[in-house]
Length: 164
Image (tube, rainbow, N blue to C red; front, side):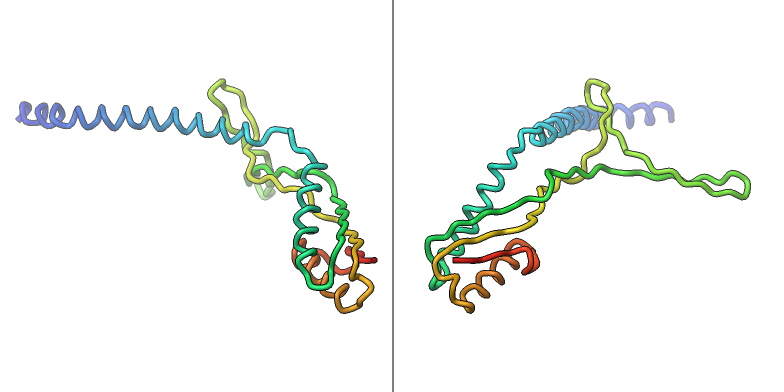
């Protein structure tokens, strides 16, 4: 009876070793992947370049409208990048009093350093848009431009100014 149990364990040993090796490989790959993601979120964000890209895209789409030409666009941003981190909470009962506590969730990297878990990076929100162009003297065209800008950038009409 003891011989059969030993043979069963010896029979499954190579499968167990292969699974263990694959687990270790996946562990190292996941650490490498996490380090890569953190590298992409460096503080080299250029607000002026981001604004210029938005202005250029908006200018190009406005110039496609009938009756609109010679478009100049200025976009104003609200603040800078915003980071959201994972937050945990715990509740405890101490007698008849209940207390709750919130805290940043931390993750240890391969070097043993702790860092908060970043869940989301939000780009700066557009605060306002000014457009100067030919064709804006026509109320119908100006209204279409304002609606296009409002829907494209998720703004209210009072945050947009269009003039000739």
